[in-house]
Length: 441
Image (tube, rainbow, N blue to C red; front, side):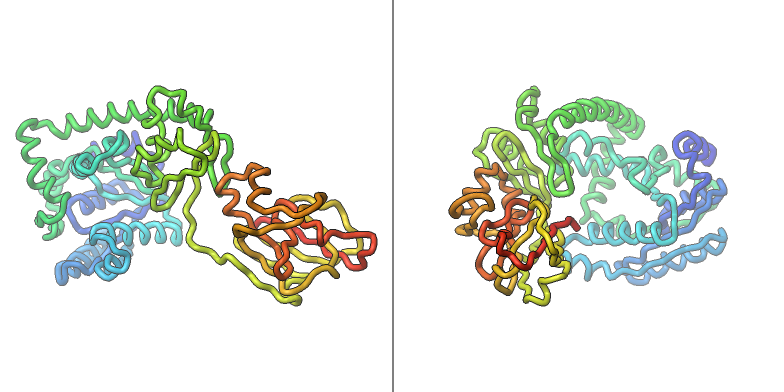
């Protein structure tokens, strides 16, 4: 089997031979065999072990076993202790999810801090089958049926083609010791139920289950390539705007395809949406209707869908006295204002205005706009409500939510990034001029 592993590395991951590698190790069969394989190949590896403090003495014995293994193989080992139960309670998640989040965050931090090129995990063919069956029981799309990826970012899983039976046979033949995790026998966890109850029955039905599963996954991955090609073609036509704040899609491009729901699912699944009927309904909904996931939202805006991240609550108002406001850089959530005194006024635009200093009253306020706000648009006669002004400017809901105002006491001086107020403009009688620049962060 070692020869098969070497051939697999040569074919799929030849770059590992020249890389600095962090190999994750629990002490179980799969990670111990992976460590021996890498060591025998002469790969430049160090070990990383998580002690989750979940099994008392058993956890400590796992740690001691790994420390000795590292000494025997002359490998550097990193060990981290976690209070996993406390973390799970604090973040209201299962123990398994807490352990997963803790370990991967630590692995990535180690890799970044110590300049490891890749992180190896010991997932094997049986793990892959279990993951697909779990996804199937929860409901999934084609991506959930293609199993665990061999490469994801810095994570590489070189044992995926090999079964647990093969790993165990190699370990026994070469007198390699490993640790058994007693929690793997508990059937209170879904994965263990599938491992101990479901898969044995499937293997009775088909003794070559893992081979059949591998063929199925290969076929599905080929199908994924076709799906991705079609999806990319639609995305290329549909996306009309893209920046750090939002992505804007043409609704007409989704309506042109035979199955809009399928394309919407593939386009937006990674953003956490689950209510797909609501999203499909957005295509024909009134402007302003929205659909939400925990992290993102989709807004119907006339003939477009706008995807944006749901951001945590930020400060909605900043109050500045005269000393704080003048000749200073003022940082607020949407950018930076720079206020300077100048001798001459230039042309005002969306990012720069010139105002008469004597017409100002303090304090200055930078705040989000509110219903009922009005101003006197520069170059126009009379006042105008901001809601009407935004409608005339054809702002969508997301753009309106991101509008900030610069105010002198209660009066609007500038609708930031849009238009200044007529009342504060520079005239022939102006003696002192302030220039205010709006810059992005």
